[in-house]
Length: 368
Ligand SMILES: *Cc1c(COP(=O)(O)O)cnc(C)c1O
Image (cartoon, rainbow, N blue to C red; front, side):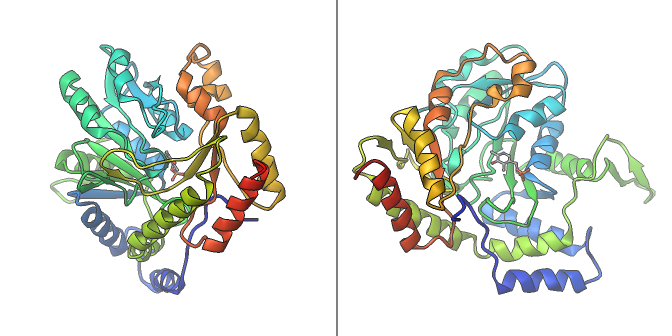
């Protein structure tokens, strides 16, 4: 079975994990800071805070901004549930915004009319690694005095203009290091910021809200968690980070192969280059012009040993959301998109022969 996504682990990765295991520090040691420095340098950001998952990163990002009960946050309907779930975990209400049909990102032209007195933040998601239209989102945020958190779980290594994602005008940017993401540590995440105040708050929240007071004893000033990353994971992250640009280049090449091989299928819509952004190609999403083809093509490819995935049905259609006040939400584009999208395999070690094989199966489904 060819999966839709897969990690790449080599000897260097294994050796660095083994060295961490043999060191004095399994957690709360020097590797964490080393990884945070390397990640901040890579993105061009001032600070990085490494945490135990992308979901933990989102939870702490909302808390660091003081998002609480009664607040609203604007989130694209097309994302992984965690983006909205963690706002709910803080007592806030996610308000879903429809998406654009070229990038499948939040439709920035539809944000303003969702803003109310309760709105505190806009949370764009750089879907599939394609950066959202941040200039417009930052302008809206300044105009309405809102904070921006970028859920960049798909977009480590992507560029927006000349800057890397992770270094922009947003208050906070979150990453995930789950095995299907650009680099992995098994589980892991990070929050990027250019503001010291947020950085200091995040460091405390990550570890029970406890810090050393002036007398040198431990003092708990905030309600925090244990969202720490281990040194074992950080060692893996450091060695993965060295390969990141190579990973992205390979993903870009694979996307190019697919585009060439699949471009003459009239029943398919392929992703393209949008604006002055460079995608990290976390996903390669094809769209069937007819919803019935999506379901049949998914089964057809499965029978040939090719794994695919649906990213994502609109978040508010999950049963939990339907039961909690979202039954009447209707983001038209996100629904059409959710019924017709299919993520086909893309990851750094996928070979040209495999891409050709997957493409010819797709062509044969459409009788080409
Ligand atoms: C993967 C992902 C997350 C969550 O990251 P985990 O590390 O799995 O907790 C959040 N948002 C998006 C868009 C993701 O793809």
